[in-house]
Length: 240
Figure 1 (cartoon, rainbow, N blue to C red):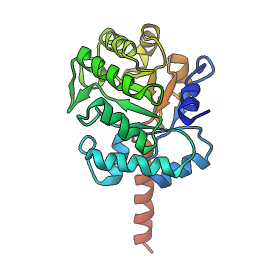
Figure 2 (cartoon, rainbow, N blue to C red; figure 1 turned 60 degrees about the vertical axis):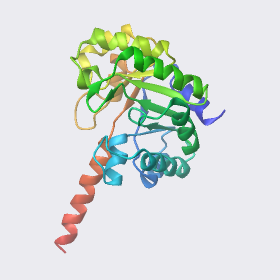
Figure 3 (cartoon, rainbow, N blue to C red; figure 1 turned 90 degrees about the horizontal axis):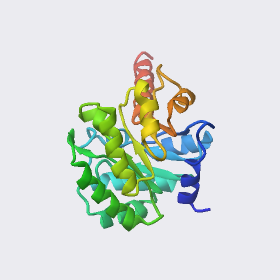
């Protein structure tokens, strides 16, 4: 099986068997650590990669983001999906070409820009073009930002998700959705659902799976925890 076939297969049959957990590396070293720990696939967080490059989330130049993704993909043998925000204004063909050149098997694509939701039908049309250009070479995860930047209406999130699934998205990501609405989202969304997990309290990945998550990602959480741990070591070093 190719890496993308392996990645696609990991999303199947996850319920009730538990969600697919995809930790997020931000550079080559963190990717190798995660691979050596036994994770079968990884998903880069745009915010974590941005921090490692010295940028605020949402301000990383496309060239630097794709270069960082390429370094991560080269460092490991497991499949890697890349968070490339809203596609950086690239035409679908160029976006797909850059992702494949970097070695990614999937991508996370947001339906907002600068904190403003995009027109869902126009975004769905764009996703359909991405899907057409990618064929079966990329696993497309469509982020739904209704809870992050919209009115938080679950029905509106389900409507957007339906458009994106019809456009060819293989997974949808209603980021920021409260846990109490996950069962409703699960019942209204066809196909895999990505849920944002936490490491400092809140539901475990297994519990999120029971609520409807097919896949759990953590965004920049691991990078931020690593930075805090490093700060602790730096502070301790100053005392010596």
